[in-house]
Length: 305
Ligand SMILES: Cc1cc2nc3c(=O)[nH]c(=O)nc-3n(C[C@H](O)[C@H](O)[C@H](O)COP(=O)(O)OP(=O)(O)OC[C@H]3O[C@@H](n4cnc5c(N)ncnc54)[C@H](O)[C@@H]3O)c2cc1C
Image (cartoon, rainbow, N blue to C red; front, side, top):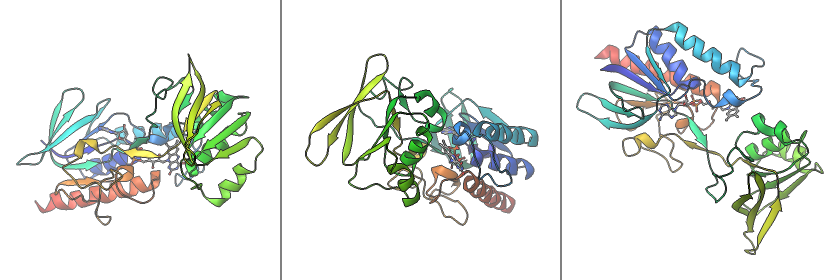
């Protein structure tokens, strides 16, 4: 029986692990992978104390800090699939058929990319369908691509693609673009870029590799086809909260609702921090701060028992 199980090995989970180790809380950290979402980023310039670092290097530093701190058990390469409330705390079940018991839980399981859910997306994943522009933009030199999503993420993907692609379509589902004016002006006026609003992507086309996509014009119902070499999907993210559905309160986006003073959830004994929570801004530094807040609150509770 652990006092605390931390679920997640991103910046939030790692920060919690380091603090729990220092506070000598009997802790297990379980993560699918250690490092977090931004490991794929080419350059992170707002990790406080570091002017510029690749996501990969940051992930490595986080893992080293966690392991060198010591004092807690760490399992990576496994996923928590289910959490049950018991009389003494919680029972966790993992993908590798392991079970663990904990008095308290801190969920720092972050989020994953939202998928289009249309025919062809899965078939051509990695064969022209791409979810990380920072990682894959250089592969599309002199190619025609579409970015799905006209928010900040979509326009940032277009910025990544501008030095490489010969033509960039930006397809937005709504009638208006939802990105900040600064980035909008920078991208929209570039002759390589064509923005299509009211566009609902209905199918990704291809044989061995992406060759195009079909989209419906939501105003007149017409289905149009674009010839393409790549499709960059930038339509937001989904919190990794499925395994506590029904146990803690989630908002309509599936984010875990927390008390922002302590990070406690609606279920006594469960805390949440970072991108999986209903925190307004999703950032590395914020996940770290919120996870630390949670561990300090957990420590306070344990000290009173
Ligand atoms: C391409 C990209 C670039 C970014 N660049 C920046 C940037 O420059 N600056 C910035 O501040 N932010 C950036 N972000 C956002 C930042 O990465 C996130 O805000 C941050 O990673 C959130 O940290 P987290 O610990 O809450 O969750 P995550 O980083 O998502 O970590 C979640 C962890 O939980 C694990 N996990 C998930 N589900 C389970 C489960 N069921 N069981 C066990 N483990 C599980 C995952 O393996 C992972 O270890 C970027 C994000 C992306 C995608």
